[in-house]
Amino acid sequence: MIDKLETRSIQAPELYQWGGLLLLLTAVAYISKQIWRHLILGAARDIEFNLRRQLLEKTLSLSMTTAKNTENGKFMALASNDIPAVGQALAFGVIAFFDSIFITSVAFVLMYGLSPQLTGYALIPFPILAGLMIMSLRAIYRRYDASQQSLEDLTEKTRESLSGIRTLRAYVQSKGDIQAFDKKNHSYRQAMLDYVKIDATFAPLIMLFAGASSGVLLYFGGGLVIEGALSVGTLAAFVGYLGLLTWPMIAAGWMLVLLQRGSASIARLDKILASESERTDQKPLQADPVLEIKQLNYAYPDGTVALKDISISLPGGRTLGIVGPVGSGKTTLLKLLQRLEEAPAGSIFLGGKDITQHSTESIRNRFAYVSQEPFLFSETITNNLLMANPSAEKGQLEEAVRLAALSEDLNQFPDGLDTMLGERGISLSGGQRQRTALARALLKDSPILLLDDTLSAVDTVTENQILDHLKAQQRERGQSAIIVTHRLSAVLEADEIIVLENGRIADRGTHRELLNRGGLYRDLYNRQAEEEGEETLV
Image 1: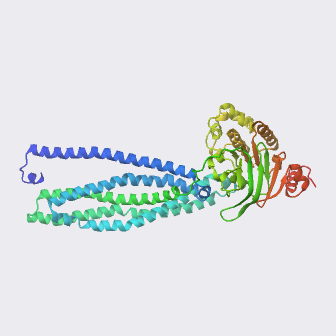
Image 2 (image 1 turned 120 degrees about the vertical axis):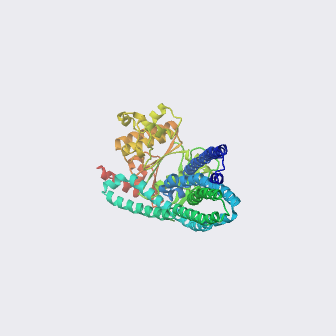
Image 3 (image 1 turned 30 degrees about the vertical axis):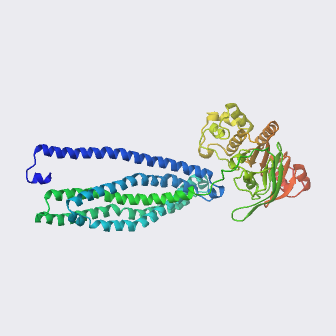
């Protein structure tokens, strides 16, 4: 068309024909790109969705050892930054890949058909560009991975600072914490700048080589036109096809960056997704609630002995108290019962069956557990309680609240059970959080109730009221209870009390037997009586 325009031999209908064909090709390209980009981008979003779901499912099913050794910031960084990087690689990376392959192939074929010699000249800079890109790939992967690891540290520091904001203010350490945050922030900034220095070279580099290719084309192509070996129209077509190659070059560089970022992120995700999970192939436990512990020995992963030669029997409907100094293994024992930590085989039995041979879900359903530091979600009180029994009716909720001595407190809340709690239940007092968690455990209606210093934040009057409610419920349901406590008043009427010291059973018996026998229990009793201004035993 250009050659005919140069010689003024083209007619208007022919000009309209060529112009119409160009418009038609543009419309077809637009529609086809809309369709397949929609499909590819949609598929990438689905993959992101599934990856986030897999990450959460894996996180919730991790073995306790792996979960404890993995900082929360890592999970947050993976979900918020690495998964989108994978999605971009699968979406725009794939689009850029097909664009670069398809357009480059078509442009090359068309250019070669016009002039093989000129095609060779025009493509001289491309091998150099390809070599530089390949040399940069390892640096991109390494630096992006380092930036993501730095982001994990920054995210974990941010989470920790927000969680401990009360402690920071109480000890007037806000400025010091900001300085610690700045160090993490600067570290992340430097890691990202190291990555950006590589990433930012690609677009200018591509434009440089694209310009160099155009210069080579004009120099050699212009000479051929002057010599009469090439028409102006052919040179113009070459310029147009070479212009088409500019985007594929940019796309190729972009694709390599995205794929390297995605590769680094998927490798980080794979470390979590391939981590050890709790076993799900074990059969569920179906047994009566009689609990037996036989010569239990347990050491922490670092080799520190936590429990040594522990033997306990707890028939249904009875109450066991566990007391002892801090660090004597009381909480560890409760975790072993629920397989939150893994006990040695042949040491803990429910209904005569080894708990290590049955599914963790069925084991944990046998227990209703209230930890030392109860966790409440940023939800209504009702929704927090319903976690224990999603099908519970309002009457059951109110009964659980009554048993936990929380009814009067609820009457003071403007929305009662529908009161929305702050993060981790921060809008409640310590005692209210403990009693809300206790109500949740009571709603679960499990055969064995585990209380880990649950009443430490309530006054003695409320404590006695709750204990009376629990005794009545135990008689009605035949429920067993294990009460771990530092306040001996909570276990005065227990059927048996175990005294732990340095991971061993130092003494055992009823309250009266232990007092008469003397020893550690009596010392603890006298110390607490003295603190409360009561008469001590000699």
